[in-house]
Image (cartoon, rainbow, N blue to C red):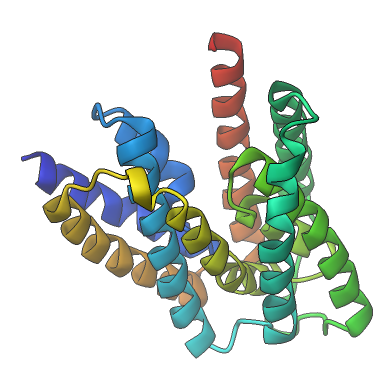
Length: 251
C-alpha cells in the first residue's frame, strides 16, 4: 500500500515541479519525511536522484517545444556546477543558521517580486541580449556558491532571478530545468557510499516521477501563461521559506 501511495504522490508532485522547471526534491524531501524515512541515508539520496531525472524529463519536454534558451542554459549550468564547492568550503567560516535566515529572506523577497511582476507577453517575448546573459552568468555564480553552502539546488533562486532580468517565466522555467540537472546528480553522487535504497520503491517512484514531470512540463508549455506561472512560483517560494523558518525556530 505504501508503494502505491508514494508512486501516485510522486507523480502529482513531479507534475507540479515539471510545470516550474524544477526537480522534485524541494517538495519530495519533506513529504518523504512524513512517511518515516530516515533523512541522510534514505530520503536525501532518493530525493536527489528523483530531482535529477525529473529535471531531465522536464528539460527534454520543454526543449522539444523550443522554450530553452541554450545560450543561457549551458554557461549557467557550467558556472553553478563549478562554484558550488566554494560554498561547501565556506561552511567552515560562516554560521549556517545565519545563512539559512538570509536564504528565507531572499525567498520572501523573490516571492514578492514574482507575485507583483509586470505582465509578460508570451506571444512576442522580449529578445534576450548578450548583456542580459552576462548578468545572468554573474548572478548564477553567486547563486551557485549560496546553494553549495546550504546544500540545496540552485533552481529556486535561479528561475525568479532570470525573470527579474527580463526572461519570460516560461522561458526562465524551461532554461532553469536544464541548469539544475548536473548539480542534482553531482549532489546525488556524494551520498552513494552511505545511501540505503529500497530498490522497488526507487524503480516505481522513478517511473512515476519522470512521467509526472513530462506531463507537467507539457501542460505548462501548452496551457500556462507566464503571469500565471509567476504566481504559482511565488506561492511555492513562500511555502519553502515558511518551511525553512519553521525548522529554524523549532530546531
